[in-house]
Length: 432
Ligand SMILES: *Cc1c(COP(=O)(O)O)cnc(C)c1O
Image (cartoon, rainbow, N blue to C red; front, top):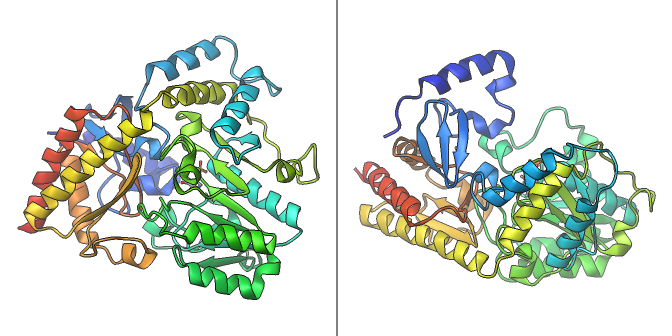
C-alpha cells in the first residue's frame, strides 16, 4: 500500500520556493482535495509511479491524451525515429500534411485544419477566426465549460477555475468579458431566447459537446441540435471544443456520437499523444480566412512540431484499429458498473456518467446528472475522503471533483479489479 510520500513532500516544498503555488497548472496543486500533490517519475501502461516509487492505477492519463496508456510502444518508436532526424525545422514537413489529411478523413466536418501547440491556442484562434469571418464580436459560452485560459472565455469557466472557487480571473479586462455571454449547459430554451434577441450580433457559440471540465456531463437530447439550428438561422459559427472529446469518445469525436456537425472544431490532448499540440479546423470557406490565405492572423514558432506530429500520427494509427472504441467503452462500463455496485452495497449516494472512454463520478442522490447546479450540489466531503482513500490504496484520480476521468486501452482486468477493490474500502469508510 503506497504511503511513504517523503520525496513528493520534499519536492513540493522546494517547488513552492521557485514555482508559483509549486505547480505549473493550478489543478495539480491538490487544492480541491487537500494535502500535498504527488510528484511523478514515470508512467508505465495504466500505472503512474511517484517519486517515492509508489505505483498507482492512473485515471488522469495526463488529463486525457494518454488513451493508449503511458509509453505505448508505437508512440515511443515513432518518437525515437523522429528524434534522430531533428526536433524542429520551423518549416513544412511531409508528416504534418499527413496528419492534417488524417484528421480531415476522421472528422468529416473538418475540411482544412491548422496545427497549434495547445488547446488554449486552438480555441483562442477559432474564436478570432469566427469573429473575423462573421464581422461580429459576441461569443456565447456555457457555464462550467472550460476552453483553456483565453481571456474572454474565463467567465464561469470549469476545470481549475472551478476547483479554486474563483470562476473569474483577475487581469481580464471587463471589456473582453462583456463580449462573452454565458448560458446554462443543456438549457435549449435559454439559447433560443437569447438568439431571438441578440442573434444578429453573435459571432460564435463555443461549447464542449460533452462537458468534461465540470466533471463529465453529456448533452441532453436536442441540446446540440438546438445550437446547430440557431447558429444556422442567425449566421453564427458553431464551434465544438473537442480538445477533450476528440478521438476520446469515438474516432470521429462527440460530433459523430451525436450526429451534429459544427462549423469549426478545436482539438488537442489525444492528437498529440502526450506532446504539446492542438488544432483547429472546419469548413473550407471559414478556414481560408486564416493568414496567409486570408486576413485573420494566426501563427506559431513551434506549430506542427515534428515530434508532436510523429506521436500524433502513431496515436491516430493505433486508435483507428477496428474495435478500439468498443473495447475502450466496454472497459469503462465495466469499471463504472463495479463502482456503482459497490457504492450501492455500502449505501453511499453515488452516480456515474460515461461516454466512450470518458467518465464522471458524482457523490449525489440524483439519479442522473445533466446540469451544472447538480454538479455543484454533490457531496464534496465524500469526494475528498474517497479521493484520499483511493490514493492510499493505489489509485490516482484527478484531484478535483470537477474533472472527468479517463480509461486507456492499457487498463485491463487486473487494473480495473485493483480499482474496484480500492473503491470497496473507500466506500465503506464513507458509510460508517
Ligand atoms: C484541456 C482543454 C482545453 C485547453 O487545452 P490546453 O492544452 O490545456 O491549453 C480547452 N478546451 C477543453 C475542452 C479542454 O478540455
